[in-house]
Image 1 (cartoon, rainbow, N blue to C red):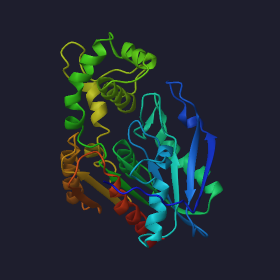
Image 2 (image 1 turned 60 degrees about the vertical axis):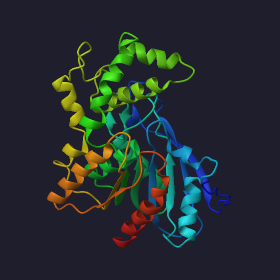
Image 3 (image 1 turned 90 degrees about the horizontal axis):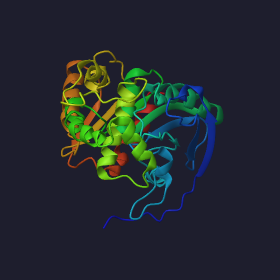
Length: 324
């Protein structure tokens, strides 16, 4: 069985919260968000800061929670430093959860301007409290997508690491539209489905995946209300709506945003959401454009891949400190 970490944390964990108007949204989600910061032993003077972005239905702060036969993210940080694989740096785990269950870390009137919040407001708040030499992002799935896209679109990140981040939307989301539409039509549309979710004590497997597609619509194609990019009768794609989604696919974003910081991208060769195929196309395009990056396709799926952080986090630290 996996080894459980009994290591006692030697560093200091601190929580603070701040309110940001850039997070104004139509969902009614709060503008005040809590941020958990872990400072390992040995931090002196200015050091790098690595921000963890959570996957769908997760939040950064949850990575500090105890789990059986596992280690928390702060424990992982301290172990990597103790083993000499990286130097001391600051770990940040923000609360980025939304009432739609997730966050793609892009600006949206429905969800809030999370891209701006990360690149400006959060960095400003952290810099006012800690001596920071630079910022990096790391995340998995939706968090990996956020790290990659923010690396493309912002100029304030010194390095980013994307684990199994959303890519190749035609495969990733396209085949899920029919099952999503079938589910929402049971409640006479998206609004009825969302009312059902709000009133439910627990979510079924179908509810979970349908809510995820609704969250993607709110991110990639924000309208006055959440709408799927398909015809409600035939499930045929509505070109205008689907084109808005595809404009956020890293396969298309890379054509307009090619000034990437040091970038790590990996994915499992048996990803349940078929993300490996989109990543393969993205890597081919990065190579064609001569954009530097690190890529690895490992043996695994979309699940149980936290061990990949043992590789990406020291890599981020090395890239941040070698260029400072």
